[in-house]
Image 1 (cartoon, rainbow, N blue to C red):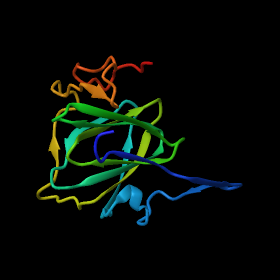
Image 2: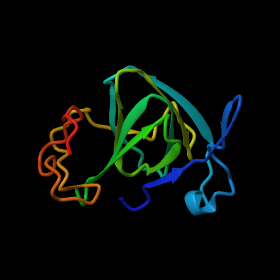
Image 3: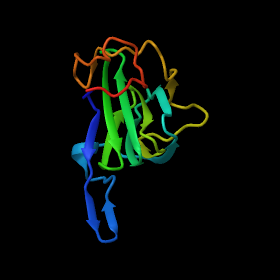
Image 4: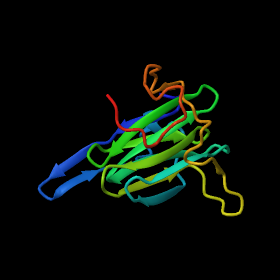
Length: 167
């Protein structure tokens, strides 16, 4: 994983009514370090929707939790040209930490909409947003490795959010 990108498995506590799951606790120091969130957001996306590329250069970190559907979350380091790709879904509760200085984005995968709850460590400034953007299909995002692998067939090509699943 890129430095600072982390995936933290969440625990479900099922009972006859359904389940309960803690999604963020201030005492999860091994995951959060000294960070804490200042804003919570909700995002609804239709199947196939790509929300990318963007980054935050003033120190913001994002924490993503997929509560409905399935989402591909990607983080790209422009200097090393490494890309992390994480598949997150409602069926495997986890929280994904993305340091804002990486270019990052998401794509709803599968045939149903996704609902994402995400937390950030900086308040959104409407007058001066900490957000730099690129087109979702930017041809200059060319990973040399994906999840640490250089033999992935998608390496050394412009990133294609719509590349069919491979094995």
